[in-house]
Length: 234
Image (cartoon, rainbow, N blue to C red):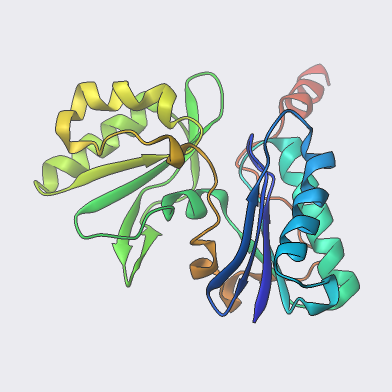
């Protein structure tokens, strides 16, 4: 099954085409062009590299948040419209799930995606290995980074073999903070984990995350600043 997977949730946009779990083409944005301009180009490029056209697609999947309020909507609007017009299955993937699974799941490794949410908060969840992938053992949440570190420290106390794998656009910002508390229990920093890497995203696609493209909505963990300000003025 030929699937187009796309993401515009964070700073880097990306598009990938897989065929029965084989990656045919994968592109990430470079430069300063906005996602609204760059993302359609990425889709066209991966189709061209794969020697396909839109009608060759069997399904479409979209990383639908959390992330940038504007960014999330750009990719979702484009991809769900494409799926609706082509009348093919449409799937949604949570940004945190994708980041947590950038690397293959391994025993005793706890994967912690961190997405910048401002004011020392992050969007996050805790993931443990299960049947070849990392699956969340907590709810998606927006939480102060100190609280996240406190919870991870408690987990490490309970499992002496546990190692912590960080990822996401807030990884670099808070890496040393984790390391100060957990020392060598934190797996060394890697820039490649700062971004939403789609190479393993196909592993997360199932009928459980299939959506109606006409009604699919972004996944947000909290309201935008603009919405909160409007409510405060009422």
